[in-house]
Image (tube, rainbow, N blue to C red; front, side, top):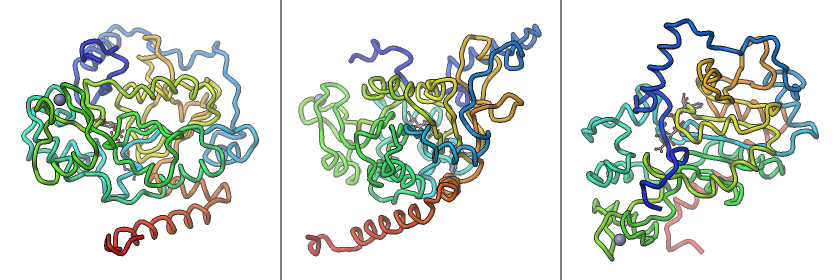
Length: 357
Ligand code: OAD
Ligand code: ZN
């Protein structure tokens, strides 16, 4: 599809932090509304009818009880870079350790430029240098990845929507049909001009030799199929999202700042009764009274007196997954899964290739 013909909602866009044009406009509007003291919320509107509460209690324990009940059959997991930091892969926005705070050596106009398609076409070297550093294959999945796999083994996983491009869900054994890699993958690559496909091995070989991968037909850049800012998300995301979220009994959100749309807006795609559990180091995705006024819905409400379905567990994702597994009586199973699978990966990487069957 030609770049200009993409619908705006298909293209990843940052919510607030990086000051992109749309968010600047929103901030301005927000200020104006506040200045003129417009009533900006209907969150506390007592006349509004409260949707049915499905959780036995609005707490982490309540979520575990709900999972164990026969009401919860289809769980969707939404994840981000925070589920992979324990594997040694930096996230994007954590102050200090996040990727966007550590790109000074690339001399970029702004940190996000490294993943912007127009910048890449003019100056691809920073991306390829970073890709070499973060190339998938050198990392082990975390307990959080295996928790997703365990949900699949229990027959409870409707789908795992991930923003990550490290492929660790696949390495952890989550089936391809249960996965939506919303920001693409390193698995395949294409020429940015003639769209000729190139294999992962071919591109990896070039990247590791510090060569810029160029199309054998037209000499243009060959880019891994990860979604850059300015590019559309994969078709699979749009094909599955509506049915999946409509039939979702529980949404688990882990390790993401929920700053990038359209991924972040999935949170609002479930029914208004569907419980949502955030496992993260910080709260995010909370309801924004201004956005409510603008007609948007879907933000989470963990703390108000009316909170009836959103639960937040603050801390490391792996600890949160273990704590949830513990409440469900699955802790030993999860720990065994992690140690057995890590053992397999370690023996695979320590065995010389000629000794492998
Ligand atoms: P961010 O870096 O924006 O957010 C990661 C979140 O995980 C933050 O809220 C952290 O506090 C939290 N976190 C980090 N480590 C954690 C841990 N071990 N346990 C619990 N929480 C932890 O990453 P994403 O939300 O994934 O897109 O970023 C979304 C998108 O922005 C990426 O897919 C990428 C990026 O620009 C594109 O490049 C298109
Ligand atoms: Zn080409």
